[in-house]
Length: 276
Ligand code: HEC
Ligand code: HEC
Ligand code: HEC
Image (cartoon, rainbow, N blue to C red):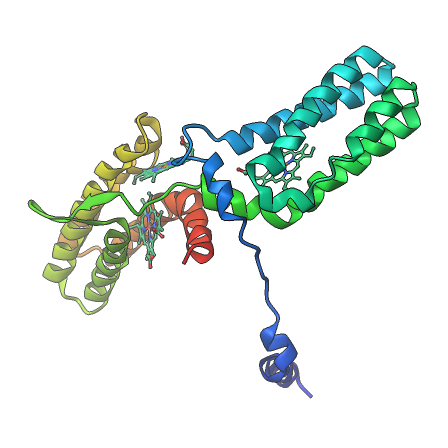
């Protein structure tokens, strides 16, 4: 059997096997009440800040346990407990995922100077953190802390605007029309499509300020080098320089589209899957 046949058989086995066809990843949605502790319902990212405090308290207790500082341990255990109890207060559906009873044991261990038990209970608490994180952390970050493009409008022409996603759909069409016209030696059409791409990207660039108050990120992707490439593109197309035009389009694809996508689109796509 040659390697091609073997690969074909493996592919066919995957395709035909019902068990494998059904296999996939299932992600659990967090309870709806979590939304109360994030923007826009809340002014602050209350949930996340509670989490940061939990981690700080855990570290303080561990460090004081290692240096045998009972007062320090007691102080930070109170902080830890108070924040830990907030988990189920904020999201009652997650009560089962917390282990508040461990705090009685922790306080007793600290009072009786029992470092071994203190460390063991801390590990158990950390385990309850990890269990919840394994299921929910990435989903929650994508759902509540990734930028939202639904409200962003992009100029379409002198009088109209369009949604962000519609604007995105136009961009590959312009690039492909340039490439098709180049290949089929329709120079005037290629130039026209290049002008359209330039206009579309300028309009897109104006929408960045909806989220970026600072100019630096916008300049990184839409700045002078990009403007120069777009100008050169029209020039090369006009002079019939096919290879150079193709090369420039590739550069625009990487420095404009791919660079922006690596930050913005990956998360947006993930959020789209989670929140259809
Ligand atoms: C803000 C920086 C940014 C730039 C610059 C950018 N994109 Fe996008 N693009 C996005 C984001 C964000 C999404 C996901 C939008 C969503 O899901 O709401 C996206 C989605 C897309 C999609 C999928 C649309 C869909 O939902 O079906 C295509 C196609 C696309 N971009 C093409 C391009 C091309 C081609 C370029 C370059 C000429 C480009 N984009 C430049 C941010 C950008
Ligand atoms: C019932 C669920 C649950 C429990 C229990 C829990 N967390 Fe979290 N934690 C989350 C979720 C959900 C996130 C994601 C929040 C986000 O990204 O906005 C998170 C995020 C975090 C983060 C932020 C991670 C980062 O670097 O961005 C820290 C730190 C953290 N948790 C610490 C803790 C500690 C310490 C404990 C235990 C003492 C704990 N958490 C218990 C649900 C939980
Ligand atoms: C819906 C909101 C949103 C829009 C619209 C948006 N961005 Fe961003 N962008 C973000 C967020 C959030 C981050 C990550 C945090 C940060 O850096 O502010 C980011 C990060 C970046 C970064 C990397 C970090 C940095 O500061 O250099 C660049 C570059 C960038 N954006 C460029 C752009 C450009 C160019 C546009 C318009 C074509 C754009 N963004 C449109 C939300 C947005």
